[in-house]
Image (cartoon, rainbow over all chains, first blue to last red; front, side, top):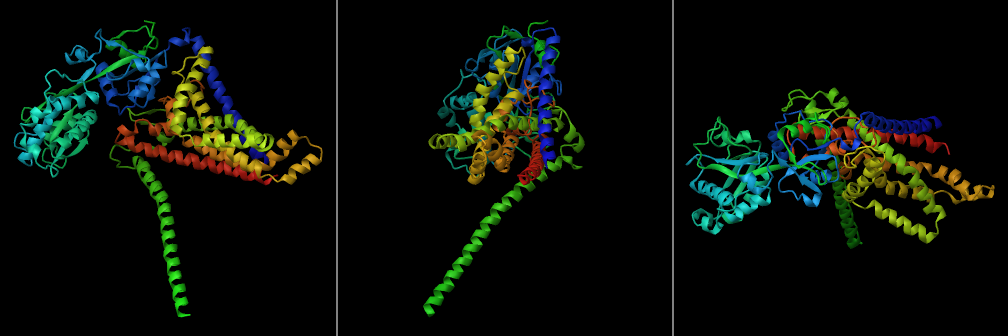
Length: 315
Length: 307
């Protein structure tokens, strides 16, 4: 009886001993390393399902599995900003819409270009990607009403002040200078005035645009006679096949497809009723506010996130 | 007579109806457990079966692996199991003496009014939601760990570390442990104490040698409950754990990864294998909790017998 108790206590003590030993070896390691411990870079990353991570890794050319395994995984954009802001040796990435000052982080310019809405829109800030859309071909809809509704929705999302504001609120970077009031646009689509609750607009394609598109659809619904919608976002690669290509008449057929990248040469969108860009999505590398760094190049970012560069000052 | 027997009959029918109603409720609540366990099992086992739609995962390398990376689809939870055990047991080790001494003070030493006040404070602590503990931990505990590490010349991930998780869990299981211990200590027979005092033992000797010995079974039950909470805590832990990609972590100032934080991080945004494998992690967690509860219950039985 007593034996089991003492065994249990020994197990606990052994466990704590192991923990202490681990702590000791690490101090030794950093002391013998020669450099001061405070300058070892701590890399923060989002979990791999994050669209921001995808955009960031694409921009710096970091392939699958190349990320250093010394990285710490954070759960959200806000979590990223908070954690990097508390860590003088931290580096991470966040969307451009993050409140940098409130989180005590500093956004870095990329290849010498500061991240602002202007530099993103004129294309000089390179850590960005477009959100594109493509629709089915003219006349290839279940009904004329549906085709009109799809046209109206695209107009709402890409041209109206109201729609662009929704896109902006959900992280998209848009050019508002040519926006017009929705009431003006709506006049072109008489179908909006009837009850459309029996019609379902089906969307698909990139998962990264899901937040923006679902917010737009939600805002659009009451303006369009309560039209129904169904979202099946699976990946940018499905946007074209399911609207215009091989799957357009199958079970996965959709009315509007989205891609979080430019359509490539294999994806012919010329036959679409409409295709174009909704907005741009930009990612910013962030460091703690007192970090001396102000700019980062693609190469340096790659070296840090792949683990070959582990110190901010050593070259 | 006739009217009376009619009433009796009616009452009997009402009794019968209610009996079935209660039975229905009991079956309903019991079936929830079966549904949940079955769902987790089916989802959790499916990645290891041949013909799994996202590519079969090797069970052995899943259970013994020391890398967990979604981007390369490397899922090994071996080190995470060790991490989880380390976090929970060290938290218990830290919390146990504090809560036993606290409960001894509240139940035996403190004046009645003070004791009652402190007990309600501890009960309040138990009802604080875990996300609130998490915010406290990521704001205060990490800052403490950060400055402690800085004074030792160790670099940390902004204070997110194994140590922060241990301190957080110790605080979170403290109320459970303490209130169970208070109940156990209060239940100790007064005669035992009086006998000890009559034999010339001092108050302190009586408290440690008689009261605690008599209450140890109940205190141990509190430890088991507390450990269960430490194993299962997800929200607060993932706010300070840092989610390391490989392990196990023995360094108190290094970031760690627990079974719960692994399940929670990015759950909302993911799909496919990465989604299903979280159920497998959940199954592993259930098994770990069952196993440690069983072992501790065996220990409890042994020490409970030899008063």
